[in-house]
Amino acid sequence: MRYALCPVNDTETVFMAVLEILKFPNPKLKKKSLPVEAIDDDLRRLVLNLAETMYAAPGVGLAAPQVGHSLRLAVIDVTPVAEKKNLLVLINPEIISAEGECTWDEGCLSVPDYNEDVKRKEKVVVRYQDLEGKVCEIAAEGLLAIALQHELDHLDGILFIDRISALKRALYRRKLQKEKKEKEKEKEKEGKKL
Ligand code: ZN
Image 1 (cartoon, helix red, strand yellow):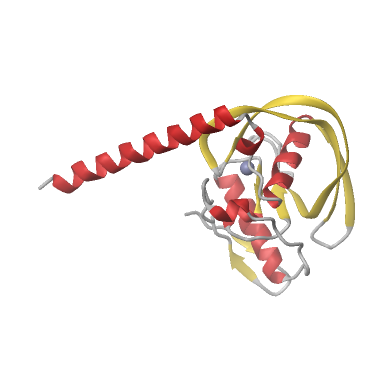
Image 2: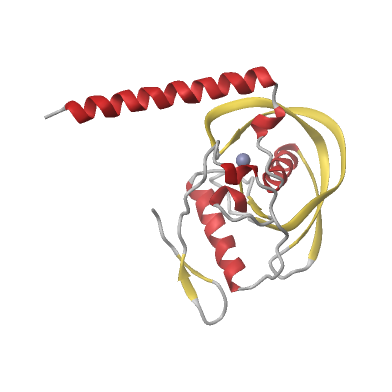
């Protein structure tokens, strides 16, 4: 765990925490998230911790359900690691237009050690609220457009592996089971040591 000091508001400074990222097949990842009702200190704290967790992973996006909060909230930063941070906080985001098609090799912090081609829209426009509650729109293409679609999917309980063929998904499940069995065998061996 890594902590950094960061202000939540004018009077309070909190310790930021790296949160546990839920992994497939955790049922919480399948739930449809609820809209954010109030942008208060609790939400600001959650945003800071989401960002901290995303940067620590490292990843280019993280949605609230991935850390166990069933809220329509996500953070994205697609700037390369060496460059200055450019955090995008998306509250109650929705895709208002999309065009074109593309295929992108995707991965997910909740689906470790697995990448697969996913069909996505090439360009999207997303409407969302920022941390001040202001309604904003962002037009995106390339990696940012993919990240937006991927994170918004999380808010509806959809993982990228739900968008690949059933055969590929079955192979992934088999790989997971095999790894689980191997881990159990290792544990058994450990248990027999004197
Ligand atoms: Zn993901």
